[in-house]
Amino acid sequence: MKHNSKKAILSAFALLALFTVKAQDYVRPGGSYTPSTDNNPTATGPKKFSLSLSMGSAIPLKEYASTYVKGSFWDFNSPDSTHLQGFAQSGFNMNVTASYLFSDEFGIKMMLGYSSNPFNINTFSSTVGFPSYASTQTNYHVTEYMIGPYMSLLVAPKLRVELGAMIGLVTISYPEIVVALNDTLTDTYDFNGGNGFGYCFDAGAEYSITSNLSILINVAYTGSTIKYNGFDETLNSPGYYPYTFSHDTDVPYMTTAIIKPTIGIALKF
Image (tube, rainbow, N blue to C red; front, side):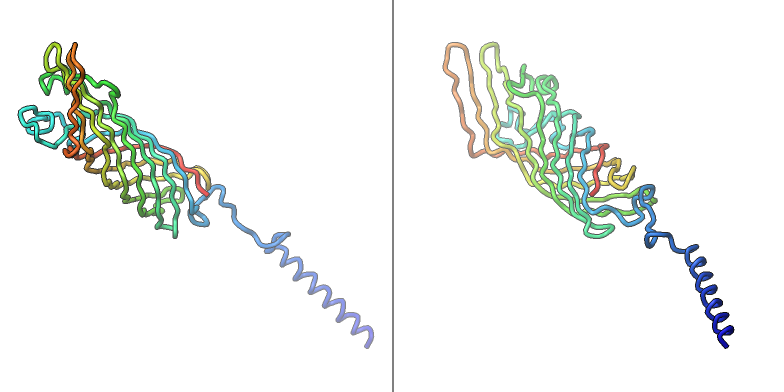
């Protein structure tokens, strides 16, 4: 009887050892196995927070780029017109964007954008019919403060397509222009302020290099109507004190649009 009991105990230990060996084939030492995401940043979903820097071109459109002055502010045969023509040329754009995803596909982003567009003073001078020059700056400086929703769609393991729509404030300072009316008399135009409600639509692609770093390409369209809170007009002739007319009640405006193709990088958290 004791011999049979010993055989049963030995058999039980043998079965337990067999099951233990088999279990070790399926369970790694130290706990359960978690797959690495180093080579697949989207394995556990996208990072929620992103901070990006993009640079590229700023291509002006509408009155901002127009050189057609007939019936506009710069048509001296119709001095009461409030339509400004910008004579802006293609320039440089830079954007800093912070975004946050509420889910894998939808989120919100904020953008601080800057564009610099040259003022084509030579075309301006020949178009208005008087020798002219910009007395202070020769470039427009455009600043955008934007916020709005965006959508991020996974189309490949490391590639996402993004679409966004933002609203906010756009500011543009108009260069101070000096027009030589004759050999001795000049007329200087100095515009006050320059801002308006703006909107921006953008579409782009994001390619993940690692789970924390991506390359971005993007095309954005910004639109606004920039209003100037009056302007000062100063007549200057040698031997006389300058005489300034303050046109505080006049509000010139300029319809503005900029197309911005850019490339950049994003840090993901």
